[in-house]
Image (cartoon, rainbow, N blue to C red):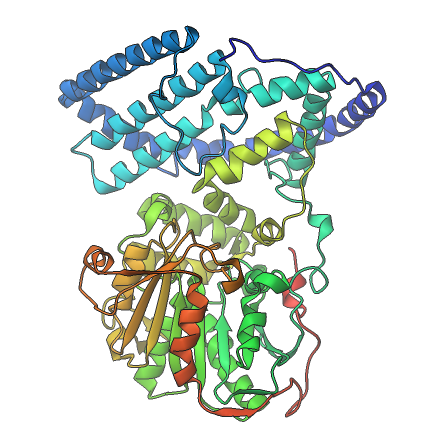
Length: 596
């Protein structure tokens, strides 16, 4: 093991450095003005502690004062572990092979550079950080006596602090940054500062980290390329019918209801991973809702408006386009919550047009909200509603920032290091382009959703909520249902989706895939990744279900196709958009291109 890293020969680029400094000088005054204006407007909200962080940590410290032995024991254990680390470093200095005191967790990409393993100083720095992080989070996690709400907050924000303090995030402590700084003569830091100004300007004074090269993609050309037509439009969505790719199709069409937090083309990124293209190749006549990106004019649109102008309107459009009254439906995330709610409404009305329902990582029971629960309590919803009511919507950037914090090492710090310290320009990545293409939330809809579902969990309660004046009881939904969730989902924890699946009154198949909220769903059979768990038994507790599961290789897509085929009817000649009525334009339509 080397005591110090080997540094490269500098490759100075004076002309490039001068150009970058000129760009910095030109951009700085304008950006600084935007930052100061933004900060002036946020002082009040910061002082109010809208997240309730201060109250949560005061409760934590109060528990430590009541039980000082908890802190003392943690400190003693930390001292012992630190002493063991120093001894191990001494042995490594003498050339002995010693296992790491705290191994880097699987999937943690922060310490990939060889120097973190091969250079004594950086190896020590890495392990000292991981040891301290483990001790800090362990102490917070072991502290008893906190309310559930405060426990969630202190654990979440302690993790955010620990992640922020990683040595990889500091130029003088990160060997990759040191090496690049020597190699370029500091040009990487100049470029990084220029990129920082660029992102502050793009965020109008608020940091909006550029994660991918957005200029590399054009909707309908590089992504969202499945051919089709817009066959109907409401103020909230366009209904797209996709071209067939088989000579015959199942008689019963397939309606896909994506979430309106992002845009539908997560299911049509590229030809190789497009669920929409794959479903058409299996013989389905596929219709998808493409939601509008709302502005203040749609502020009063409620959750029930999304139902009537979304799936219910789409059912009418599908019947007009194909002559078929009955459909199979898929709901993804929030779209699945809407699908479940719509089925409850339709059951109350005696409407049987949806013959089967598939739920992609969808919550019907919100009792286990995961890390998102940190941001949703009475005080925070009150403050959020006030801000939404002032402008009529929740800004897309605010929603995106919240979701990025759930995976801060991957979606915040990793990109910040690459962009601002290493000075690297973003690379094209279709998934990150989609991730950045988020949408606003109308004030009325989002307030109803947060209060009635996340805060009160009333969708799970028979007649707990009403849509268009009709009480909803999910137990009256008798259609066959297929639930797929993912093991690493931080947005819709599979334990909660499992509980939600038990709210329905019909037969249910529950499948647990690998990976997370997006990668576990956008998982074509050709990738042959992750596998999935199945269990035909339906015990009350999710952990009991998991104990009886069988591991299956490949993608759950093929399992779903085997399940849906008997629900889809006989084969009929393939249907093409526009055969039975007018079309309003080509896919991907006009709503999906709106960036407000």
